[in-house]
Length: 225
Image (cartoon, rainbow, N blue to C red; front, side):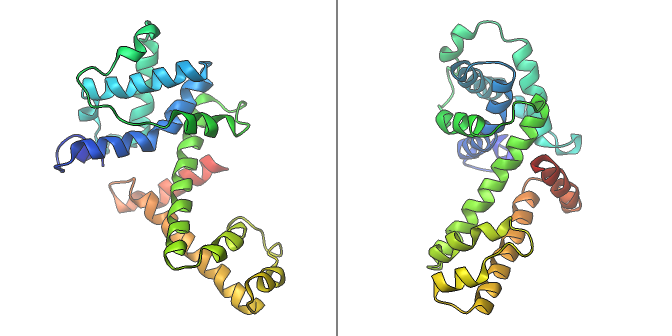
């Protein structure tokens, strides 16, 4: 996606830029908010950062050999914030660039909806990125079950993804779904297995070298925990 946004491997550069910005908007916004800025100022600053990122073609400096892309973005954001003085001009930035739609209300809801005030700003950024990735996996999983006509089953069994052994009410769910408990156990197993597959696929899509997937999975799990 970064290569496409750099205009190297895709005819639809803007679509790649929009997808890239949309994916990293919540963690970058959370970082700015955690640095003490109001919701309004954080929206302006994050939007201005993306505008500057595109205007100055900072993405051309992103090199997969130099480490994780999210680390590159966070360093760029820190540099931007340290040099940002005239916030009153935030709404005027982005001239000459196509407007990218970013959901500021959603980002604020995600930031305010969790008690993360005690985390360092860098840790909050990592955690928000990991949560965004996790939410993407959950949306994919739900959409897949909906396509199979099993949305009710998905919604009922979803808590099993985080349940400990002995906490899953197989008999209760069996009664609700009109299934045998053994069949519900099989359904739970399939749901969890598919979740793990999608989780790995999503993480694999963020690294250039397949050998880095396991390390990145550990990093994501550490951020979530």
